[in-house]
Amino acid sequence: MTDPRSRILSPPDRPLIAPSILAADFARLGEQAAAVLDAGADLLHLDVMDGHFVPNLTMGPDLCRGLREYLPDACLDVHLMVTDPAQFVVPFARAGANHLTFHIEAVPEPTALAREVRDQGMTAGLAINPATDLGAIEPFLEAFDLILVMSVHPGFAGQAFIADVLEKTRLIRPRLHAGQRLQMDGGVNRETAGACLEAGADVLVAASAIFRTPAYDQAIGELRNGPSLKKAMERKAT
Ligand code: DX5
Ligand code: ZN
Image (tube, rainbow, N blue to C red; front, top):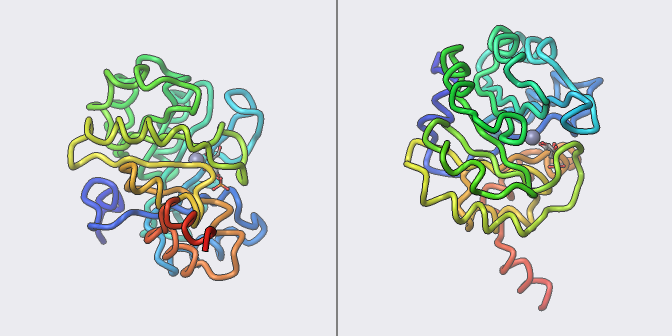
């Protein structure tokens, strides 16, 4: 079996699509997670919220473990929206997570924690909220396998894309080396995906745009080949 982390460290030459299970039907979670992978998804994105860093509560290591047991080959991409991510590195590693992203707003000096995440056998990601300036993460980019630019204020699925963050994505891209991924998360759909890709993102997270549609393969294909905002606007104009 190939190491699921290779999907982040040496991905295929096309954008990666990471369905966020936050918009899945939790009563049918295993079945729906398996179905998005069958439909071509590259990663499964788990949004972990603690009711403190963000005003919502979602899932924890036990849910991650359940998915790992049910889907042994899946690459599990865990996005920690929690005040104290250090507390959860070992529990998620033991629960079978392959990748762990935490927020710069929670850990302003993130290098040591990135090392800990990697020491636990996971790739490490650093997330930045829409309201946080690029300067906050700039000195630390090198320490991470993935940078996550939030395109909504974290907390809930189904919010509108904040286009202003595209500028941040554009500025980060040239500062990363070929082995690093640039992920966007929040409000990514068939209308906004193209703009994310044009700005330099190579991993797109989407909850509503995948799980709230009837045909996962079509939704994933549309995100991967996302029409740009420009093209979408041209279509509207005609
Ligand atoms: C937001 C989460 C996102 C969210 C995306 O706090 O980090 O991953 O699930 O949901 P959509 O794609 O519906 O905006
Ligand atoms: Zn997320």
